Every structure is written in structure tokens, then in C-alpha cells.
Image (cartoon, rainbow, N blue to C red; front, side, top):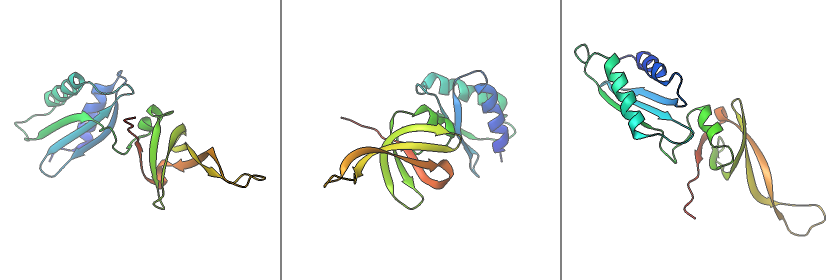
Amino acid sequence: MIDKSTVKNIVEEWLAGKEYFLVDIKVDSNDKITVEIDHADGVYINDCVELSKFIESQLDREQEDYELEVGSAGIGQPFKVEQQYVNHIGKPVEVLDADGKKVRGVLKSVEGRDFVVSVNEKVKVEGKKRPVMMDQDHQYSMDNVKYTKYLISFK
């Protein structure tokens, strides 16, 4: 079986000096290798092809046969790494917290593994009879949410 750390080292060598970053690597028991990369401006198919060829040049099919799939982190899929959060600052996201509460808002900031989402919600204001719609900041830790993903809008 092909070792995941071997594939990771190969991918990191290709990524060196590029603005791409590694999102995920999976190697299953049948030696199917899946590599996901991302970039702040999106991923170009030519770069996926280039990375695929680079990986193939570093692995020996005579020694062990494998299936290789290189692609981008899917749009609308949950974030897997910190850099995806950073790339989406100022954009709409959906967060499912550890308690199962879903929140939609704008990703305001990221600091380490913590992030803030600004949510427009009803707030009871002293002196007013009815709640008022206001932006409220919700702070989360990447380690304590079920998922965070970019909200695609077709408006």
C-alpha cells in the first residue's frame, strides 16, 4: 500500500513556491490516491494536470499500481484547512456548530483556529418595543464546529 506521508511529501514539493495549498490527501486500501488542492483565486485544470504528472513521475507503478485523482476542493464543500477560512474572509458562509445550530453570515475574521461570523439577526434593544435587525458577531473555533462552508448565492 502506498504511504500517505510519501504522497504528502511529493505534493508539498510541487506546492513549494506556489500560491496553491494542500487541502486533503486520501489513500484507500485499494491504492486510490485522492489529492485536493486550493488557491485563493480558484484552481486551474492545467495545474491539476501538472501536479498529477509530477506525482506520477515520483511514484513507481512497477512497484505498486495505483489510481490517482487530483482536483480542487469542491465549492460548497465544508472547509478542511485554515487557509480556506482565510481565503473566504468577507464572504458569506454557513456554520453548523457543535450543538447542531446552523448560522449564516459573513466570515469577518480568522485568528489561528478561531473565527468570527457576523450574522444579521433580531436583537432586543432597550427602549424599543420590537426587536431590531442588527449584525451580531459569533465566535467559533474550527475544532468545535461540525462544518463551515462557503454559501453560494445565485441572486
